[in-house]
Length: 167
Image 1 (cartoon, rainbow, N blue to C red):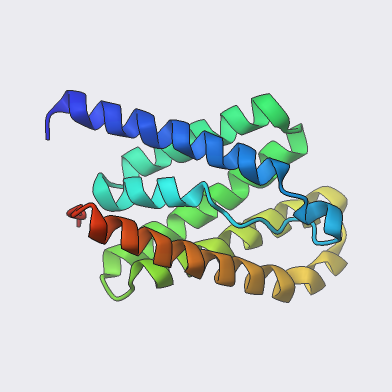
Image 2 (cartoon, rainbow, N blue to C red; image 1 turned 135 degrees about the vertical axis):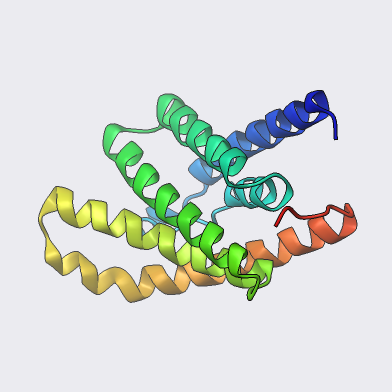
């Protein structure tokens, strides 16, 4: 793959990632009494970059998406939640993918759960409310379920595009 093609694909993934973040922002899940629960659609792009290119590119897309989302429709605390969740999620993705023991479904499910742990850790630190940890089972379940669904979607995309994954 040429350098120009790689840059173009990474740019498209970054734009798609930001667009999916905006769609999630518009979803009314937090208004239904389930704060912090989102489908994690933007993680599809981060995982696609991880599988297609590697950790450095995936981290770049993740960081750009978090900063753009914060600038356009976030708050400072939202930035903190996103940074913690995004970092922990990416770490889980990278470690589990590297083992070669997990499919995209397992990697994504673990990443979704890790993202929610990161967010909850920031919320507990900001509010100094250890009682927030009682919400962990709900967040882990939601993260794992949405993550698994995203992993299935990514698996289909990688298979249908014939994308070779970077080890």
